[in-house]
Image (tube, rainbow, N blue to C red):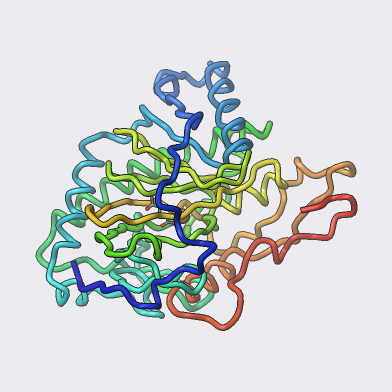
Length: 356
Ligand SMILES: O=C(O)CCC(=O)C(=O)O
Ligand SMILES: [Fe+2]
């Protein structure tokens, strides 16, 4: 990998540093999606049972795992192989596809989460490249993929992977909608046209001081859903709601971790809450992960769904424009900021009797 050496930019405040040992999470819901493959359009019972499981997990934890999800194991293996090959390239070849503030897809080695540098390098790409002229968000962000030269297999593997995971994303979106008592396709409209969905390849090199730093600082995912592949090293920690403890999510072969994001929290008017998570690093092993950030169209106004709002349960958030939110976030991850990053809490209404 490149040359990461420990310096103060990576050091977390004492309260954010990982403890020397983090308990493994138990009771995580692992939802077997194989019944979905068998469901015919007329048979809603099986679908509803899965939706109920997704609903319970989203309430209790804000995340769950899925198996038998329909993404071919070969497509995952090839994407993971391409990822390893890319990060093993010499620094100058990675620099040739570096992302910039204006054109945000590509390679990057100094991501910040809440103003502390993450111990990782990454590569971002969009799964569905828009046809020219390139799509922009708010006239600012350019979503053009940068492909490394002389690595056709890298591009091919990630395009195939992106298509397959996109299918899973829509299945999960249907389950979430149904779990909230809505029509299966209730949320589809937000993902029409040019979405802001992107795929991130993460590489966490071994670290000499894993007690001081994090691969990704604690955060919540801002989008709708995250579909995360992780290798078998481990390091993803989630904040357990029942007791506020950090617990480690043990890698399960052929599974994905699904995070409920902030947008679903807002759409559901707080029935579901997005999960706080972070990544710990270790001294011996590098780690790889691939989050697929399922994000709506940039023009989307995010607000509690009208079906879930009533006199007894008034809207807890003011509407916000996703494109503006996203570009502000992306730019702030790019560099250190003097001000607090934009959060959904900034759009929370003061609802009488509701203590948050
Ligand atoms: O690497 C992981 O397991 C999670 C990464 C993550 O949370 C993120 O990129 O938002
Ligand atoms: Fe995340």
